[in-house]
Structure formats: C-alpha cells, structure tokens
Image (cartoon, rainbow, N blue to C red; front, side):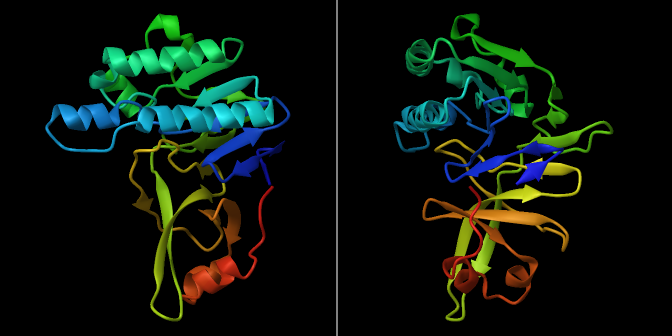
Length: 233
C-alpha cells in the first residue's frame, strides 16, 4: 500500500517496512512488562523479551533493514532496567551493531526513562519526520504529514455464521493517521471502531489481509478472511 506518498509494506509480524529508506517500523514492544508484573507478585510468562527481540532480528535480517524506528513504549517501566533485561537487550544490540535505532518516546518511555546510552538507541520526541511522514507514538493528526503511530494496540473482532468469533491484531489506516499493532510478545489488544472510509488489515495465519467494510458490517468477516481477502505484500 501507499501512505503519505511512500510505499509501505505491512508484515504479519505486526510491523511495517518503508523500502525506500529501508526503515522498519515497530510500535509498543513493552520490553520489561513481564518483569514489572512479576515485581508485583503476578505470575506471568518468562522469555517474552527474548521472543520479541528474536522476531525483530528475523525481520531486520530478512528485509535488510538499516534503520529501526521504535514508535514508542519500548520499555514498559523502570523495572525494565533490571540487569537481566538490559543484558538481553545489549546482547541483541551487539549482534546488530550497524543498525540505526531510533526511539520515538511514548507515554511508557516517559515513566521508564530513556534506554541506557550503551544500547545505542537514540531517543527522540515525536514527531520523527522521515520522507514526508510523521512517525509518532500517539495517533494524532499532524498538519504537515501523514502520521504513522502506535499506542492503541488495535484489534478487530470478526464473526462467522456459526457464532464463531475471532479477535485479531490489525493495522488501522485513517485519512491522516495510521496505527500499527503492538509488536511486543507480551502486550494486550484494544478493540477499535473504524469508520466506513478507514482501511483495516488484519493479521491471521501469518498473513495480512484487508478486511473490507462489508465484512465488518455483515458479520461474515471470518468467511471473507479465510476466503482469500486481498493480501498485502
């Protein structure tokens, strides 16, 4: 697809790629969320930081990305500065030392603080302007550019004829603002209410498929999804 005059590739790993600048866009990694919950005595899965960074590594290598723009909420809280978590990130960073990493600060980054300097991640206040786009965390219109943001963790619920229901992460593109799904392995999802002119691309079975307005209205979204709704490549 094209946004703001730029080709944009939507990826089933819940990321997007700008081939013209070889820039990978990911939002809402929430690194350290699990350790934050464990600090509160909540039993949650382990290994989510490693899983998130492994997926990011696969994309960087496969696409030949030379830059990653992190669209906010890279670190979940100050608990993400725990030595074990930072060691995992630092090990990943050494393996991708030539990669430019830019962090557009989000609301969780404000509380967590910037990543340590040794990680080689450059923090920036929104918007980050790139090739006519405004890369942000908060999905607010910008007078001078098309906005690509995160923050909302968008998802859509589709229904089938047999009363089946399926909740899927999605990309949500409005007239002036596009929102990426949350990239992190340990993040929630938030249902959205798209307008009839909005474009939605759901992620299912390692595919990205556009969900047309008719599928959202007539409750036959599952049949249309599995029936070959147009894939995005």
